[in-house]
Length: 249
Image 1 (cartoon, one colour):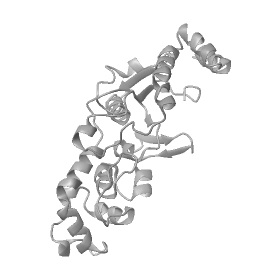
Image 2 (cartoon, one colour):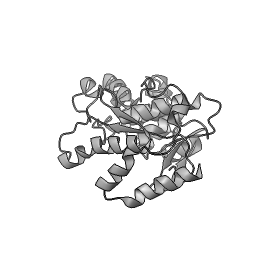
Image 3 (cartoon, one colour):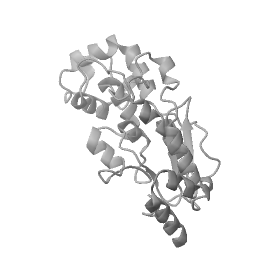
Image 4 (tube, helix red, strand yellow):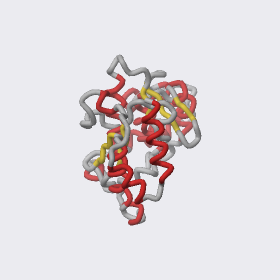
C-alpha cells in the first residue's frame, strides 16, 4: 500500500475475536474453531507493524471493522484528506462508503468500490447495508437473517424503503415491484425484534478512539527494531522494500 502511494496508514486487528456484540447475541462469531496457530500470529503481526512504523488498532471490546469505520469517518472530516481507502472486501464496510471520497478497496481482486459500486453490487445505498444484512443475514458474523429474505428481495425492498422502519406494515402498501410482499412482510414483522437486533450487530461503530489527527497516521519509515523482525521472519526483502520506500519520501 505504501509502495503504491498511501501516505497515511492504519491497520485494525481483532486482537480478541469476541467483542461487545457477543453480549448482545449468543450466536455471534467467536474464536471457537479457529486454528490456535493462526490466533497466535496476531500479536506478532501487531508488534511487527508497530516496528515498521504503522499505526495499529488492536481491538478487544470493539471489532477491527469498527476501528476501520471510525477511522474512515474521522479522516473524511479533514478537508486535507483527498480520499479515504478502506482496504477490505468485507461487505459490512460498504456502509461506510461515501460518494467517491470514502471508498472500499479489495486489494486481492483489485476492485475499487465507490458509492455507485456499492449500489451495483448490493442494489442498495451504503446507508441501507446494515438493514440489508439484518434481513439476509451474515454467516461470517454468525447471525441468520430472516426466513424468505434473499439478496434480491432485500435489494428490491430496501431500494424503495431505505430502513426497516420505512417499510409499510401493511404489505398491500408495498411497491408493486416487490414480489411476494405478503410473506416477506409477515416474516419481517413476526420477527421484528430479531431484525432490529441483527441490524444492530451489522451496524459499525463510529466512536472507537483511533487517532487525534490524521497526521498521527503518516508513515515516516520503520524503526530500528523492524530489522530484527525481518530477521526473525526471514524476510530480508521486506526490510529492503521498507527502506526503499523511505528513501523516496
